[in-house]
Length: 253
View 1 (cartoon, one colour):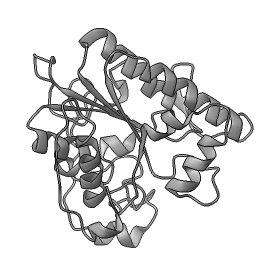
View 2 (cartoon, helix red, strand yellow):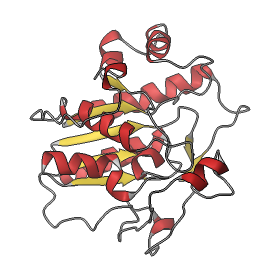
View 3 (cartoon, one colour):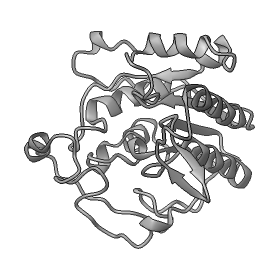
View 4 (cartoon, helix red, strand yellow):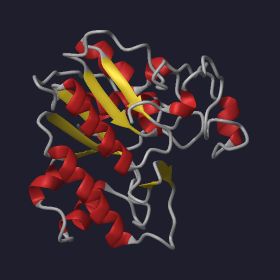
């Protein structure tokens, strides 16, 4: 479960997924992006260095392509920035196109095998699912608003019942059926369902997309720093990270 089979053996690549001129959201933005990007994957199939032998005190960072850091230099991905600030190994367990079903399964396996102290879960798009051991994208014929919320709540409860400190984050625009995206509107949506309690909603850390990576979809350096700032407050023990962010008054942590 933990391995990403289709990334094992890829030693070095200049592009990945949406991070190509053909598939990106804005070719002009792609061409003007002036930072060098390389995708290197370890023996487990993750965009990370090899894991250390001692995993007793690492921070596990689980998520989708926003955790992989698609469109970003490796050293600017949020797990790498977090690692630099807390001086503790942060493992990037990000997988392109990962569904919340798979994220929940990975987190359960991590807890079963490694007894972690801190797991940061950056939840993905609600509309994705896991079927036949594969992540599948949005399908209007199969899923709807209520079903998406119910499925996310199921995974959320499974993960947050695990015996470790779980830090829950939600990627920007995770719920694509919401016409007007904002933290407040999404919180109100969750509270208005029969699935989520106020306490559960408060445990989900929301963050804005401040900037855009090379593919003009994923977030870039400033958003990664913002994410690390809010994660630090919820680690066990807490860490004051305080990365500087452009126009910080607009984005209170």
